[in-house]
Structure formats: structure tokens, C-alpha cells
Image (cartoon, rainbow, N blue to C red; front, side):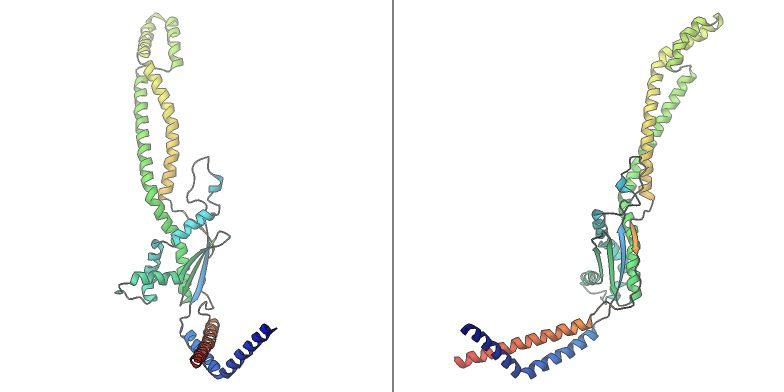
Length: 329
């Protein structure tokens, strides 16, 4: 009971104290309200434009019959592809192109001779341009700028640069791979031509395949006397070079299969190296905003006023407590 009365008494004392200082509290809060209005009016107005893209599941066209069903060019990418795309969006390759294209050093009021210009530029860039993966797997590209048209242009340019930058990165690896595949294919074709030329030379000498060779002996026995010398020579040539011809024929069939596989690999490498693929699905292009995104003036004014109100009460209570302690001392 006494504790309840003590608490009530303390609350009444606090209210009486605050009422006695009401003019100071109201005056400082009113001043903070005016300062908040002035500050909010002095802040730069920024407009936001947003583009939405989905990553593609694959960045190439497969020439193999055993293609992965999940790697279809028509499929949307999943979490892994979205994270990879965000890394590309945050890369210096895109940032530098955007800075140069829209002269952001001047837009963000950064002096060219400032020794910390690149640090300041990076911070300003991060404050005005952001990338976020949504729970649906898409990527939001948000751009804040003083001019709504420029904000939309920057967002759309970033979307366009996705393919340019990713294709450049891919070509750094695929062009050397294409050159290797081309050399292997040329070497196989050259070997195959040499093999066929040797087989043609043996055929010109009268060497034939195993089935025709088996018939030479019966042809010799059934031939007329004037033709037997021809067949004997044919048999001698086939006995001498027949095994070589058979080995070349088997090697030719093996190389035909190998050439077929290598041609598929070559076509794949050529496509990867020199075709420019699109790596995203554009769900929504950015458009100029007709309403400002920042600053939220009402929130700024309320925060400044409320902060001044609370800090004033705190200061008055502390000051009063100090005075009481001094009187007791």
C-alpha cells in the first residue's frame, strides 16, 4: 500500500515538475519543429526508378542431344543464378561504365582533384543505386537521383549492361577454348585426309576390302588363261598390303566417330565464344517517377521535434536532480 502511494506521489511530482517547466519544453520543441522544417526543405529531393529482371537459367545454347532439361534457354534462373547476377551488378565493370556514361562525379559533386574522390564516389554510388533479390527470385534495380528521367535512364542502362559485361566475362574463357577446339578439329581433319589419300593410293594399286579379297581366289580359278596373270598380281598386292588397308579402314571408321564428336564440341565452343546471349528476362523497365521518394519531410520534422522534446525533459530532470544534490550537500 505504501509502495503504491509512493509511486503515485512520484508520478505526481514528475507531472508537477514538467508543468512548471512547460514553457521551456514547449519553446524548445517549437524551435526544433521549425528547425526540422527548415532542414527538410534544404535536403535534396530524390526520385526513385526501379527495374525488375529475372536471371536466365543458362547462358548458352546446347548442341548436345543429352541436354539438361533444367538448363533450357527459356527457363528462369534460381537462387544461384540470381546471386551471380547481383555480383555482376555490383562489379566495378558496370559501376565504371555507369559513372562515365552519366558523369556521376559531377552529379554527386565530387571534385576531380580530391584525393579521396574514388572512396566518396563509391559511397555516393551505393547510396543512390541498390540491388536486391526478392523472395520470388527476381532482382530489383533501384536508382535514386535528383532528376527522375536520369534515374530511369541509369536503371535501364544497368539492365542493358548485364548482357554486355557477362558476355565479356564469358568470352575471356570461351575464346581460348574455341581456339583449342579449332586446332583439334583441324588436326583430325588433316589426319583423316592423309588416311583417305593412303587408302586411295592402295586402292589404285588394286587393294580391295576383305569381302572382295576373298573372291579373288575363286576368280583366279574360274578365269580364262589370259586373265590369270592379272588376278595373280591382284592377289599378290592384296596379300602384301591387305592388312594395312584393313587397318586403315578400321581407323577411318573410328576417326569418323571422333570427328563427329569433335565437330559438335567445336560448334558448341564457337557458339559460346562468338554469340552474344541475353542473360536476363526484363520483367519491368524503369520509368521516370512522378513523385519524390526522399526526403520524407513529415517524418524528419516529427523525429527532430520528438527528439528535442525528450532530450529537453531529460536535461531538465538531470539539472533538477543536480540542484537537489547540491542543496543536500
